[in-house]
Length: 185
Image (cartoon, rainbow, N blue to C red; front, side, top):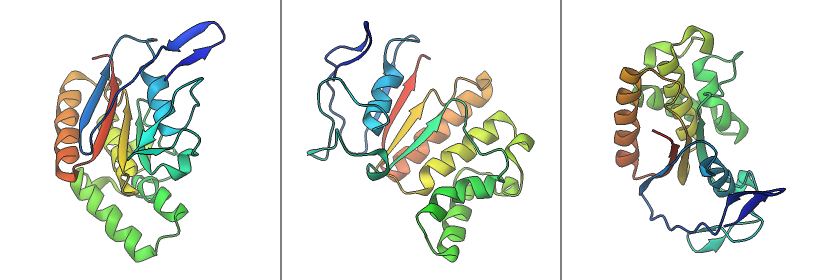
């Protein structure tokens, strides 16, 4: 993959292969192209040259909506006017799932992230670590083929970061979910 912005080279002949169920970290300093590569994998940006393949299929021109991924950002990106429950259910409602199926899946996810007691709270009523776990549940709700994590822990204090890192790894292993995490840590 190659990606340039005017005269700035963001990615110069990057090539990698990630196996099903693997957890891969893209590690490097700010500005080295980690997030750009993640966005290209997601289909949120197009490479200037190169191809993106998933399960042997060229998806370079496939829109993000057809790539079946979950994504979690550094900034949480929760909808401030929706409760934690509604944030997690959002993608499922857009997929026109039955209400009962949504309820079952969302409740299961809140158990998985160990926050069943915060479902009715707004994001502003949650700690940073709680918001990030709700964002993780939202990313997992659509049962993605792969999970993209863009600096998901950098805004958290050290103790919460360690705890959430362990939780993400445990969930990834239990789900055998291909995961790519961008980090400078």
